[in-house]
Image 1 (cartoon, rainbow, N blue to C red):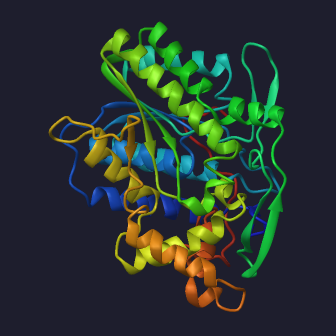
Image 2 (cartoon, one colour):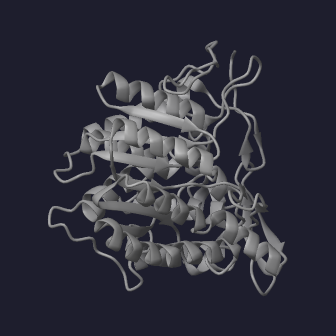
Length: 400
């Protein structure tokens, strides 16, 4: 099949197997060219490992720390007439590369919220490793079925307490307009917390601890975001922000629990804004990221997921001195470059001037478009998109 991008709004419904594999290869090459971690993890479980920060976390663990990894994700394989999801192709490419380079890499495709999948992963850890020393939680999903009650929760992206009105952009056309969103109901807030908060992270770590598969001194890290004032009403003080508050609160409780169980540590890392299919759906965020990337590139401090995760491992989680610097709320702040005052000030100044007519000049909207397409294996240098490609790509550790 000749696979082309089909973009509808903020969704791309196709993915390119060769492009995704090449994107993964480029990330692996970046890490191979860095200095190895001298105190890194050796047995790593990544929950939500198929795209974005989760995929980058798995690549860094493998190639910067010579770690064995288990990845958990929920992706769709190809059918006769339809390509697989990008996350499927990413995971297939990573597992093939890691195995060829002599690393242990196994994957589980299914509902990470379920007790059944947790038990399958625990049995695999017992069989192959005995214990795990790092658990990365990078799960993002629009819905969650509670494993105990069976209730299905759905998340929403809405402000709380007041209507939200701001600039937004159709990043495909470059048209800047105004958007307004009504505030969330109490039920919508609670449902979003149930999906995107910290309960499932907590359940995973309790299950692992009770099964006695956490190594002495094991760490776990989950990912969060704060961002600038520009996005706070729709993000940090909105429904998603409430879910992140829950994640961080449960992280502090989990830290105490792990200290008692295995002298371990639970941490939340506040990461930089990046282009993902999820972030593309949040009004204001694509416009903000377009401005942010332009300024960060200009100042030479721009990072994609792989650079950000390498720095998280090297400068925070596994520093040579053993210290993990955190803020006043015990969070790792790897968003420090994004939040530099001079960068935020430049973004704010341009934000006020932004129109459809000047967006190409004032922002990196073209860079945003390219990065969005790369999520799905398109716009990757060196890939022939006119080539007929096989869309059925197996993941070796997952039975067909």
